[in-house]
Length: 416
Image 1 (tube, rainbow, N blue to C red):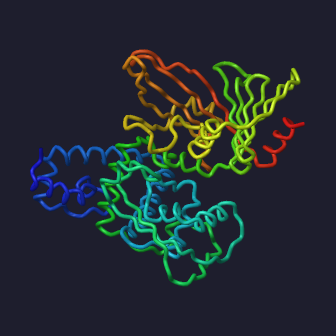
Image 2: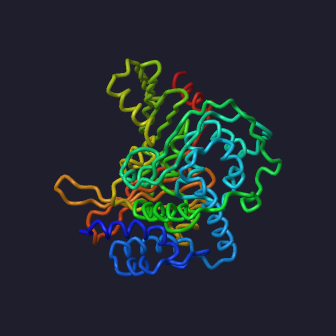
């Protein structure tokens, strides 16, 4: 076990990991720290993880290199605000760059956590994304402070798996008007932003190492598992059709609406409508004409409410907090799989599930993601009984996002 002096050297060395690798704009590493990093097993392991995480952004294509440079600049400008109170006025200059699909960030930053916690900023970012015309809006009373805290990596919640702590406070200052530039989608490098501090470099390295341990995303610009879960939180209505492998007729269809507070299924010819708000359940078979209505049991209502408050049945785990430590999240680059994805990005989530006899069953979900919205469009479920056997496809799910009127129309047909 490292002694206290060694641990202190390790903490000091963290600030120089990036410089030790010879990163852009690197600073000289003090000789005693360079010697410590070279001889310390812990620092060497951390350095290797950082190197691997950084190497994932490597690409020989000129456009990819330009995108990587832009992402680096964005991260630098974001982390310049670490430990400071971030308000809507702070976030304002960053919003245009956040609309750029080529500058996707896979880790939380002091800027993005403010948007996560500020309803007004999220709303107006979405309006900008939808190209709606807005020239000004009042600043909210939300201020966020982003801090590095390694113990927080084991916590639950929105930033589970990341070594950060986010404080959300209410400001008492009167609301100010935020003016948006007319060129709303200008690139980040056209914005004059505060330069990156040395402590921000160290913070970014710590977060990158920790996130690389928790979620392995294979390429720069990829959608992270956290972003998928965050996208699911925004869903109001969803339709899921489940198919056995190599079949074209669904064995089950599900319509879920948070806004209407209903959960409806169709299995074979049988429809079942659960109205949570009304506390009733209806069933109908259009083929036989048989129909029934009754009170919704508390157990059924609780089960549906849990689905609605979690991942809506779209993911194998209720929330990010329940993703097992051994889970691996990778982007699929196989050309044959990508060709069949019809413009969607393809990812795989792998983990081990303990079976009843104590042996592990290996699971894999292949997810087809819309990179513009981070929403799932298709899921393939696989199972592997032993490490030496091949993964077997067990189910396919197609996913759509109907609006409230479409859901009402389907419910109306059932009720008629």
